Length: 241
Image 1 (cartoon, helix red, strand yellow):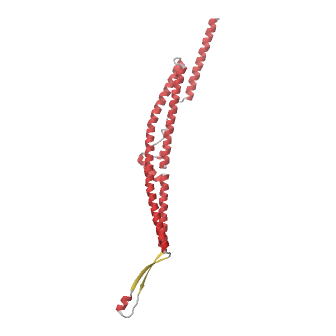
Image 2: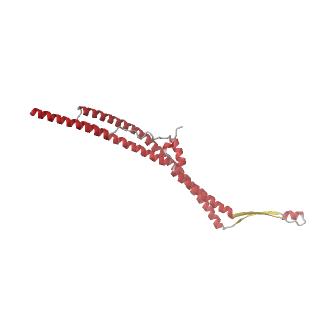
Image 3: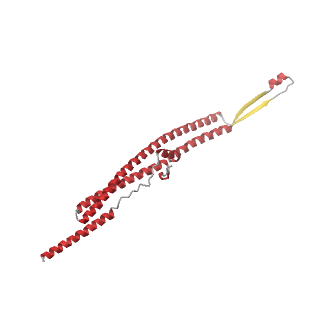
């Protein structure tokens, strides 16, 4: 009787262990899929191409170019007001008094300009032209400064992307290695040669590797997004020649 009871208990415990092993294996396989590379589509053009795009399409530089155009247009507008207000005239006077000498002396030419506003206004308009030209120079210097700053930021992000790619390769290798370890541990656990505590430890290592990999991917994509905003064009539009 005792022998039969002991046998029944042992059979029940073995069945429970098999069910537990099957359940643990299924949960690991379901919640920890194989790593997948989600950055293969991210293209990084050469630095010279990025600089050229920024020169043409950067929102920051385009705004400064518009300001330079405004200063130029303002100066031209005031100059036109001055030219329209100044009217040139020329005339010839001739007289014939029967004496060639007197006739020659009395023949003359006259040229002049008629100004339709006061000298105060004249100098005021002239000062406005000087102000607009000065503002244009300031805007041009500012554009050069923004261009240099933009190139620095592009270079920094470009190098960050290169570094992040290398980090991602390391994270990816660690991720795949941890996944392979988990699959081996599942097999050993199912065969009864590995305790459940060790399987949990290996699974935890793989979970951490996955988290590190996803964080590295997120950082890389953020760098790409920032770079696209700086140059004003999607990096995926680059076609190698």
